[in-house]
Image (cartoon, rainbow, N blue to C red; front, top):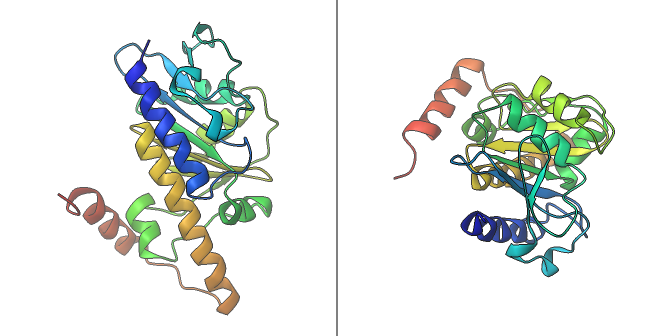
Length: 213
């Protein structure tokens, strides 16, 4: 079932350690199939190098297991909560990438100090509150605080990103860590200036409507 989506998720999961967004077995990617509404997600506690496409777990939006022999990610309830609340989202990524998580640890959003932030996110990256792992509480924090951004920091925890596809959500996860690193370095040199909101809007529009082929 959903073999093509499982194969895509397998490749995307391997990108997380390659991009240094996760360590050991932390983090996960999920995808919602637009046709069936079913969700495919990483199994819990499996090393990325040991993960196979067929290991991914298929669930419905209420958490009923449709296919799979392994336990789904411990973040599954939060992923499903986000999908139920956000019909525009078909991909979700959770990481503990170090620079972005450093901002989360101190409960600070990442302001629009860089054109790259304006391009990819179109606004400051917000920081949500603290929530325990295992239930829907993290998902509730994500939905409450992420707004129209593709990324949100979770206080004392890590990062969640969303997208129209799993690939888009992984790209957002890569970008939020990259800009968090640059902002961290900039803050060691001084206080950066925020880009004016009108310019942020223009940059985001250009990147999303003009840039690329």
